[in-house]
Image 1 (cartoon, rainbow, N blue to C red):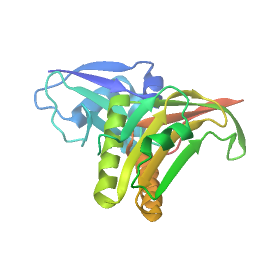
Image 2 (cartoon, rainbow, N blue to C red):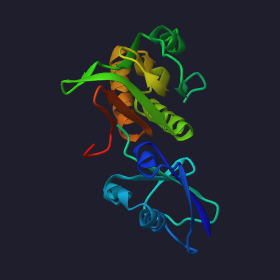
Image 3 (cartoon, rainbow, N blue to C red):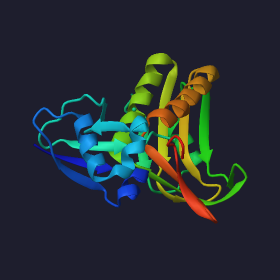
Image 4 (cartoon, one colour):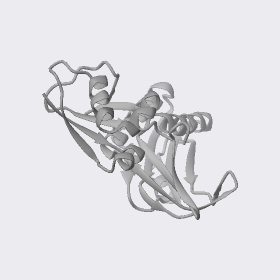
Length: 223
């Protein structure tokens, strides 16, 4: 059976290709596909303990059985309401004022906004600029899952907005904005913190830091 494998961020650069077509035996698993990719591109072998897999818009385990026509995504580890909620991956500058307006609600006693900003150094090493890359459809699905979890855990939340920017970002620009309005400020603070912490662990967005003397992908252990 024929399966297409998509590679992202560091993996794509390591082999110089965005996708690989494989002919696998019927009943082959994700791990079967991984082994076939590594047989062609052994430089990926060291990343196996850190790799995340997805088919369609869902994460899957290594023993997941594939079928003909499946599209398997190989992800480096990452660095899912109401109709009024907003979840999006965008390629334009982010505005704290705009996202605050998006979550404004007459029943809200507090609005908390988190802005993740590009800083000018990492571990004393001067940063020139950053690049962000995402699997946009899956990232937005995961942002919606986070929003749903917030509403289940904090019933007092009124509105949620989560935006992540991709592309080149300069020093001082926002890479991610999260805004939560709630009846009480405690719920707004806790939900906003939960949102950014969960986003960092689960949403497929990767960051490359550019320095005067090189560049590095952030989010992969050992990188």
